Image (cartoon, rainbow, N blue to C red; front, side):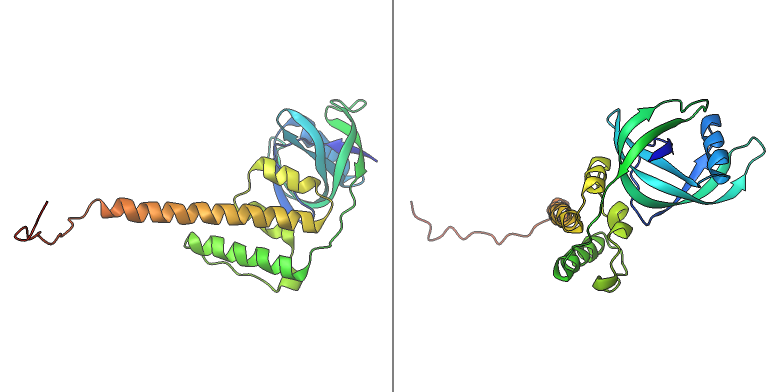
Length: 212
């Protein structure tokens, strides 16, 4: 399938609602074209100077248009794609375009593993002194939490490419265990450092019966 392209240094997951501010002329043109056409465009993730995977977006609406033509739009992330070909200027258009193939996604996450990941999310937020509302594990939308657990852009990009929910859950579990451990170590270090600012009381030694 051929899609108009809007490369961004960001990763979006299917099901996300995304708000974008459009200010470049070429992307104003892109939004103008799709708003009277298919309503879909691609957002390739621009990582380390390369684009290989991205997410199909559906335009949900234009929430505000500015006098200079800039606009605020609302989109819904749909399917993950792999880029097969890319042109920086599509035909007579100023914006880019490319041919893509869509990745199949398998929701094979076991309830027990989903529960583990959710409990780790709760533990992470508690360790940061924040509360978190966790829904029923059977209704988990994994992608709700992806941007909220301290993943790097590279980690999010790796997660995007995974075709199995079970793989994504294991990556998240490993990441959460690591980051919680780091936070616990930081808390212990704070306690130790805090002790250095206080006077300590020692019992005087009685040397009367001391022998070498």
